Structure formats: C-alpha cells, structure tokens
Length: 137
Image (tube, rainbow, N blue to C red; front, side):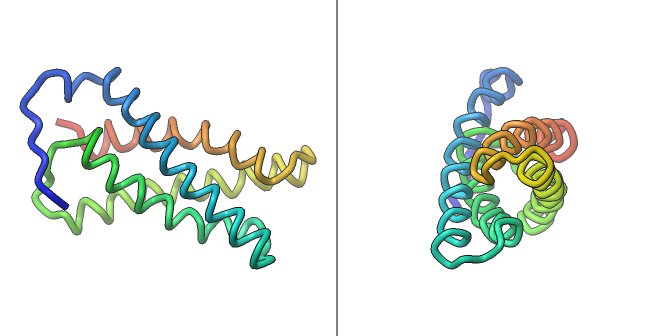
C-alpha cells in the first residue's frame, strides 16, 4: 500500500474522520453484506457462519480504505497495526454475531436487515476504538 502522509489539520479533525469513516464503512459494508449473501444464500451456509466469513472480507476492505482516506498516520510496524486493527474488528465481529442472533432469532427480523442494523451499531464501536485506541496521538 502506498505511503500516505497526513500534514493537514483537516485530516486530524474528528468530524472529518467520522464522515470519511462512514463512507469507508459503507464500502466495507457492501463488500461484507455481498459476501454474506453469497455465502449464505448461494452456498447455503448458516447465516452466522457466513457472517464470520464475510467479516474477514469486509475487514480487509475497511483496513485498506481507512488507511487511504481516514487514519493516515503511520504506525512503526504495519504488522502490529493490522493485528491491532484486526483485534478491534474481531470484537466488532462478536458484537455483530450477538446482535444478528438477537435481531434474527429473538426479534424475527430477516438476517440481511439484522446485518444492516448491526452494522450501524458496530460502525460506531469500530470508529471509536480505532480513533481513540489504535490511532491516538
């Protein structure tokens, strides 16, 4: 991935970062939800297992786009950075799985709508954790 330098105050503005993260999250959501639908409906894999598989694809899309457009500061080790990014994402995956189960099984909502509702909630967790834990100054 190319080096992206952040020297402007606008790149560090939390509102600008949140807006950018929402767009990045939307792109990652499309990748994640598309993979969920493909794995679940076309391959006939249980929706919770499919959600975990699709999550990995969405995490990769989110990481690449976030590095390009949202969190431009560089960490000393890209491997450690991605591991930390992944750990935050795995916590988000746990939240997604619990929320999807509750919305789908307990509330009777279709699993794709459960995914949308869960994604909005988990987006806030992911942004806050990445902004204030991983990329804090």
